[in-house]
Amino acid sequence: MEHQLRRETPLVEMQGVSKRFPGVLANQNVDLVLFPGEIHALLGENGAGKSTLMNILAGLYHPDEGTIRWRGKGVELDSPRAAFEVGIGMVHQHFMLVQPLTVAENVTLGLNDGRMILDLEAVAERIQLLGRRYKLRVDPNRPVWQLSVGEQQRVEILKLLYRDVELLILDEPTAVLTPQEAEELGETLRQMTAEGKAVVLITHKLDEVMRFSDRVTVLRDGRVASVVETSQTTKAELAHEMVGREVLFRLEREEVQTGSLILSLRNVHALNKKGLPALQGVSLDIRRGEILGIAGVAGNGQQSLAEVITGLRTVSEGQIWVGATEVTNQPPLTAIEAGVSYIPADRMGTGAVGTLSVADNLMMKSYRRPPLSNGQLLSFDAIRGYARYLMESFRIAAPSPETPVRLLSGGNLQKVILARELDAEHSLLIAAYPSRGLDVGATEMVRRHLLAQRRAGKAILLISEELDELLTLSDRIAVLYEGRIMGIFPAAEANIETLGLMMAGEAIGNQIDSLVKSNQQN
Image (tube, rainbow, N blue to C red; front, side):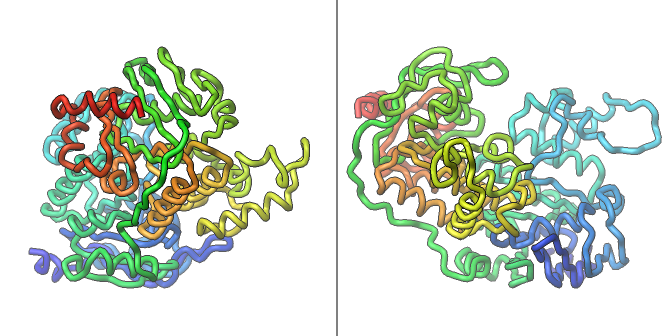
């Protein structure tokens, strides 16, 4: 079936496409051919030009050089509307939804069908039909702000299906999904391509590339490094093509002697932004030289757990201590001064200020002390030197320290936050999805940094939906379900099957209670 489809006229032909920004050549003479009925993975390091190339195809950018053909005919995609009109749509890494509006209202935003009054009941009915057909079920009458991140992504895809697009571009679609949701999305994409649609999958997750895609194009430094059939390559070969060196998928975690107690939570309760229970009686400890991993399906209290420790969410009951400092319901500065560094899940909303420069974002934790400041005066030369040092150390791809972070790729923005938090003076690091959206080389770097922090005697709370990551890095793993700790296991005794059952709310025998008690007494 695959080879029959490829003998047809290509759906898209991009030839000699180049795109420049001030100080950056994002794409250079790129050729890309997409066929009906295929899932085409687009790989590359952070900043390799993947999103830029697809933003050109989606009508957001105009190429400086090159041509685009749609079904053999030249097209000018000078706006997203022009792309929609030929049948191209894109789901961006950061969703483009209006939170107060309903699903149905969001799906119809921008439609121009000539009618003065929109029949929202008919829209809702079609959304439900599409949801059943593609297993993208979501209530069309619910406001978007009430939806989980996974449900919001379904809305973004439904917006494209509602417009009958033939080519769907998905930018890091599984970065915000659980493993189960990612598997369901893969099945949905397979169904779409079986109907003759084409899908471009921009991703860093090589397991998903191998499982779902038909062909792979690898970009490096804005150029095409290789185009291969997925069935004819391996994860190791793709990783080497992306970063130009061998990548270790498994790192050795040496034994480290744990030290004094750094983080202690006792019977902590908290509400989420909807006023519903987010944490229910959470108790846990972390010591120096230890990584405690938090496993759980998205929306089960992970974000609230990080926020109550860092002072971003109020505790309704219980106590939190960082070292000798009680931080319960104290402002974030108290947690910072107690030695807390925080890599948040929400990069742009919580982790960075988009309009400020790379240098400004990097010095947010350290501007109070020399050499960046002397009393009340900042040393801008020292700040620029500090920023260049961190940019080089963490391989942050940006034209200069003065570049606004909103212009960076998602992966490079994550590196800015990582550099700032890891370089800050701290005894406790809270890392929420630290490798989300990073390429394989950068993911390896992040994991090496976390293990180095552990060796240096830091305490680390690692929140991740990547069970392999948790099993590789953690000393102990706690499973969070509906705001409750279901159990705490030594990582060496945990397995994916048991963790998956507990993430779904199943208590695995009486062993759980004894493990919880033993870890709380640790």
